[in-house]
Image 1 (cartoon, rainbow, N blue to C red):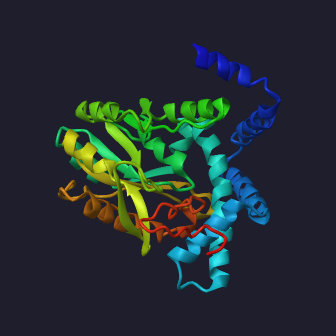
Image 2 (image 1 turned 30 degrees about the vertical axis):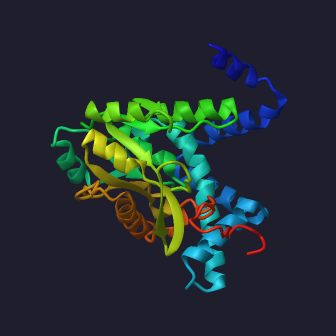
Length: 313
């Protein structure tokens, strides 16, 4: 009750007026036909690219580390494409929140459904191992009854931020597609959902230095990653399938690709298991590298003390 009151009062705080205005404008933009929405997102991305920011520097450093063979000019071009993808991604959050499922169904393709149905035939829950792309919120649409026809309920992950308005917005957005949401501290709820034969949408590809952290190679660079998925899959006894999105060119929509079940997962070696997942992720990223979330400090918590984002490096 207290949190609800705080969230309500937050709407009247002057510092949140800009957020409310942006969300209101986004809701109006989402009323437009999809190709026009994409064009507005591209325009937003072009604008963001031209504004100097620390995130732009982080993204460029990541691109330089992961694609060292690209000439500097092509690295900069990939950075620009990435910010255009980010701009579209900002508007896509509004699409996931307010666009009707009837209209979304026309622009979302599920690829590899046979892989998912084969895994579900084992009469167990399934972990859909996803990752942070600029179109992350679109991935959750597999949980909509009219898109993921005949599939079990989807349980998603949810990360609390500092702003109650943004928290509420993202929570309500994901609850349009997910039956329920859990935080990183509610692992027991994830396991319970899997034992109840539900699908769990799980993304663990970002920098992590906690209890279950393991070092892996990501595009040849050392990266600390949460290996908790191996323990969850082991306890729940459920299959793990990579589940990765792509945005189609020219405003044609999306493909949500479900890869075959990862065999012998977990194997008893968490590091090797996460390495296997990252090889699949790398292959998918290379299809549309600009769509991955490069503005994250992926290599900050590496096994070495070297920080690639330090201006001295």
